[in-house]
Amino acid sequence: MTSTSNPRRMRTVLMVALGAMILLGAYLYLNPAPDPQTTTTQTNTQTNTTSATAGQPMSSDMDHTSMPDHTPGSAAGTQAAAPADGTLPLTVWDAYAVAVPPDIRDTSVFGTLENTGAEPLVITGAASSDATSGMLMVTHTDAQGLTGMSMTDTLTVPAGGRLTLSDTGDHVMLMGLRAPADDGGTLNLTLTDSQGRQLTLTVPVRKP
Image (cartoon, rainbow, N blue to C red; front, side):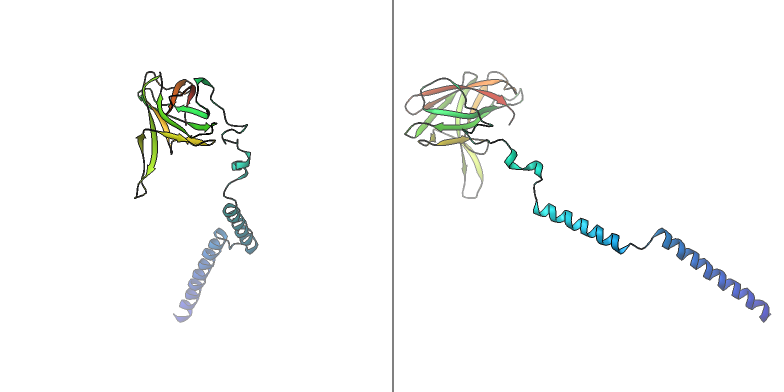
């Protein structure tokens, strides 16, 4: 009995060991150990990419030096609105009214007002034949740091200086539009100062 059982036991042990070797070989084939050189190359590539991203927050496509100059009065990207009539010593750059959906009857007018006179120019009113009324708006910040807008009686353009009208600053609002302010259209705007002088100009309507 002893001589018979020993060979059987030996065969069983050999089969178990062979099976274990086969499983180990299959595992190593399906999951090869990473090549140290490849790992180093991949790590270096990732490091270079990260460094380029951190050191160059904007790609060459976003190079601001290639963008049009939007400084009022510069040759590119600006346009002085041609006044239809007026006696104000005022040049208006890049003025436009914001296009709004047909059911909205109010809009804002933005641009840059340049005072070409030797005295401060105090604007006291804004009106349009394309709207029922106009308002001068001023932006202010309270003690808590909250920014808001309110109607003001005047907007002042310093002598030889500029006043920028924008969505985050002072601007003009036209209320009760008589027709939709569609992109590509025009609106007229009349500004009046404290001396009763006026400037009427036509501004394009466009999306901001």
